[in-house]
Image 1 (cartoon, rainbow, N blue to C red):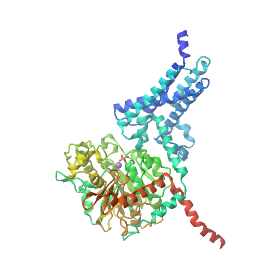
Image 2: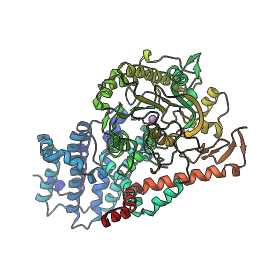
Image 3: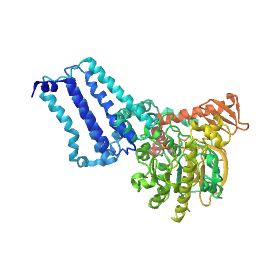
Image 4: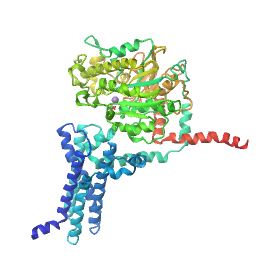
Length: 638
Ligand code: GP9
Ligand code: MN
């Protein structure tokens, strides 16, 4: 070997650069070929390519924090760890189509499923994932006397600077591709696609530590505090109690549907002809003052709120941050009454961590994208279009054991509200000039059509007679960024008052034989759990729940939104803007008028957050044991 080359192989900086390139190339290839990340455009392709660099530079450079003697060992250990993380994810992905998270590692029953076959899951090709490590190891051993990682301080500084720059560029590109990627944490696949697998683990660690911190400091006495508050709530079962006893439940989550579209017309044509007719049906209960309570967790928040009658969190999505909590959700409660349960949705199962959370909620089955025939032709935006989604769902419903509790999550009427086939565009767009608002009505019309078809198919399949249908809007679709266009649509200025009123979503409960009416009761998604359970004839007075039965006669007319807003019969408090309105005049009034509902909102949201952050429902068993001890002792004495 000529001396120049020899020198090169003894050069620490050269070693570092080669190692970085090897790990970078390996990571990129694994991201690209081992994970199905669904790259949608060239920009995402570029992100995927640069994404491993920042974290690799950063982690490998940590070895420079060690003394010169230990540096090479530290470096090789870090390199090994990163290779192992990648390798473990590749193997795990093959089986679960998902990435490893700390909560999943802790509930290692997941690995139980892998059984003794972990080795079978590894292919011959996986050896290649270690080839680079072996090369570097041999190099380091052969050259151990001459090769040290003692490089100039300035170079070390430059490496760290490059790492931080690469990370910043990556983050900037990822945020522009998917705003609020970090704050909302919706999808692991999306995160890995835009930030890489190493950053994902870092992020996951921080999130898990944060959740654990709250949990560790929580005490069982806090649950009594919650109970004391809940005792002041009224919502005795009303005359509808047991009206739907033993029936199946079909909940339909209507994506982004706000109540203002009900009976709205575009060029004389109804946007939701099916829902409008359904509302008029003698067997339908329609609630026109029903609000969503969701926060950043959007659809997943609505699911959490509805199944638990607890609020979502002020930041992030409970589905991702607290999926290990002890809960007492509707599927679990109904299981004891002989119900089976299932969720139907045409998107990836890991989106919103649903695959994990549904187990926590007690669902028996989750029919997600993988269980549907999904082709490009019948997809738009996030996944399967609503019409084929419902069509393909019918045989799946028929396969369920009755009675069942189910939720169908629609998807097509989702931001950016696009349709890719002329035939799907059943009405014209509005023409406010704001594309989002203008398209909104068209996708809403498409969804309405899918609901109509589904309803008819359920009748044809004989699944109608013994079923309660609950149609609800999951959250807003038009944010306040579109106030200008919305004021044109609504023919009024959008002040905080109107903005808050726009948070109303449709709620229709329909069942053959049910006495229908139009209700102006003020309520929100938090109230659905007791409402449904009471309809099914199940008492809920011992449940930790913040909602009250919407059909109860003595309930307080109130809705509390996640941003602290509160709406009663007389007043509306707009939380974000801190203004109070008199509902009758719609005029701004002194804040003191709203003090009572504002305080109630704060108390209730805080208590609910305590329950979720502290995982307080795990103390319920303790409570129950305390209650039952005297009885058992008595029995023993007898
Ligand atoms: C994704 C769908 C939409 O699977 O539920 O989620 P969103 O963005 O509305 O929360
Ligand atoms: Mn949604």
